[in-house]
Length: 168
Length: 126
Length: 140
Image (cartoon, rainbow over all chains, first blue to last red):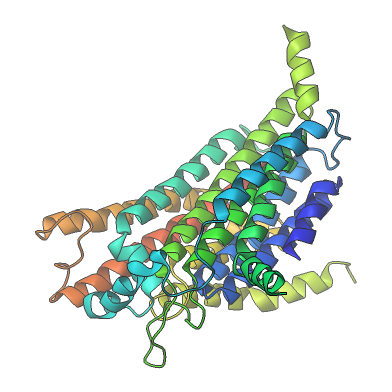
């Protein structure tokens, strides 16, 4: 279903429909993430992608045009580039370990955090304790990134209030 | 017959990664092939979301559960990708907001959000 | 009957639960799914919903732009201040072990304050970005 939605996003030219399709895509992705045992991530993806993302896109469309023009260039070169990238990625993926196997090398350090979380921080949600305590500095950087994006958007889009009365 | 089953098993074992590649390449195609700026940004966000899928499916253990410590469970999925992707999602929406703000300003300056028209207008103005 | 009556009634019914859910996700982030970011986004979305249904002016009355613009850096400041408190109590930057009487309580306090800072910044930023987008259109 994710693939079908993505193809629709590529083909549809009415941008409001693209905004709704992006919301659907985000919702489907959140469901998939939930099935993959990631409730925090699914919650964030659903709230951010389907909620804020759709609002932002519709807001931007309100201030610009709502239909995409017919593509001017040929689509052969982008398709070739995309196909080449897909081939390279497929080659890269072929050597990876199978899905979900506990013996994967990626799981060498995971149980360590899970075991350490409750005795050292008293927090059962390992994702929260890693986010806020073991990797707290990264979260500081992330907060600063959001703050910077907010400031930048305000700088770009804010209109000073009119001098006296008006639409205020 | 064995080869077909092996192939099918191999396909299913990497199914998540094939979907990720498809989504990633579609996102890339949208960014490079479409001229409309808002659609490019949507394509970029599709690309980013496919990467989330890649990381989270790498961290999953079949038969495990979400990494919230509880007496009833012993096997947990890897928490570190969850943390990384949480950060990535929020940073992604921050860049989307900023990109859309830029598109709005470009529209105010050039009157269009199609790449070709903007380049043409720039070339005429030289 | 105005056409948006259903929207207004439904929004009035659901808005307190959205804010309550945001607070629940924030404070129970330690025990279940959740945490600062999710809670901030949900709270921001609640204010945005109010602004969408009842108009930007009504939303600006209850959440003024000046408040939002003050809250954005306030969250980052809280986070950085917790880090400095780690210095002042004798450890590294952002070390929570010495913030309370024993390391586990210190960690819990540190995580609580840090998530609070994240919540404040994220919700304020979402609302501020929405105000910026929506406030621009009115002058057309």
